[in-house]
Length: 409
Ligand SMILES: [Zn+2]
Ligand SMILES: [Zn+2]
Image (cartoon, rainbow, N blue to C red):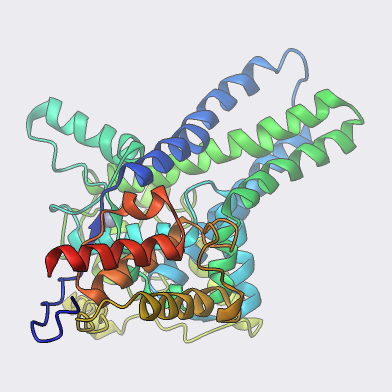
């Protein structure tokens, strides 16, 4: 039954997805990139008697920390999430690759999660608020632990189509995000190779890997996470903003300007988080440097008037939801989905085999979730994500939709 005369109502756009498949990916990511650096740091200290650190390890640690940290604040955060300036494609790629090496997730996922954080700051739906775990000392301690670290074990995955439609159209970024795990591995390999070459030994390579890879990741992660946890509980609040964001000026240099977090929540469209020249903001300095070199433009800080009145930027506009489709035709579904994937991957639609596993045709979990969300919207149905991930082919998706339509009709 096609149900043409009984149009289905379009499903409201889902804001987040809960799926055992995605939770498995999150757990793996948590263990590999959040827990392992803790052990790596302990191992680095334990390795000191075998191989004392020298100027090489310190340079690898500080250099790697600054490169990945600046890429997170300038690239992931100020450029891709908040679009506070425009950057040349080469700059986008370098920032996305270096940001990936920080091990905080692929750029699209990071952006979607962070936009959801701003939208719901310290309310239901905020993926990492320290203020939703109850009152009293215990509630606050639980909240801090959750927002600093534990939330990453398992969380709702934001609907990437809703939160990052602009980035889904950026093929360069999609490609960088698809190789996320390789960038993290490269961020480990580079210091290992440098350590090995400088010391001409395997212990030198291990020492380079530990200090320039795992310790570097550990240090940066805890600085960035402290913004989510401590700076949503402690610190000063010069501006009115949604949620409980605070400034922690003493950490400005250490966090590349990220610790002006209340400023940032109040003026999320500003490339400068310090807002005033005397509030140190290395991330903004880098943006100004890029602009001076002709690699960045539209760098505009809020006017004095806006700063005085503390007016918050209007929320980002979202594309209006499309109407749900009423027909469920297998060929149509496959043709449309092929077109969607071809557009995202930058390949001709004919090259996408509907019977091939997503992995084989280069569709990673981010693009798969995006396709799923678009299909739900377009056909006005609700597909449990695991239906898709159990058998990730276009044939299976179309089969499921047609079968569901038959049941409904
Ligand atoms: Zn932000
Ligand atoms: Zn925040």
